[in-house]
Length: 138
Image (tube, rainbow, N blue to C red; front, side, top):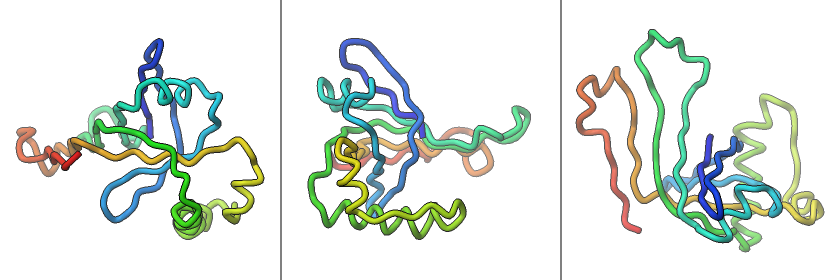
């Protein structure tokens, strides 16, 4: 996922992410990363999710969204995110870790993106770009 932030200056960063059942997105970053510093100043973000290997001639598919970010301080939520990571992503890459390892990393933080508006960009399903925007309660 690409997350775009604006603090003192605009910035975009590529992060690995997970989502929950209510469409919140989670990622882990260091607090001294430029996008993390921007989030401290301004919690509003924009994100894009897409397959960068899509041929430029194919029907485009992806997601664009805007929302707000907050740091997850709830250990149970962090544990849930790690469980999802291990189930979905790590099984392919063989990288597994426990919530305690994330905390031992010390400075890493779990961030939650709460989408306000999501645009499902799918030229196969929405050739006229209609009916594909979801607005969520903020």
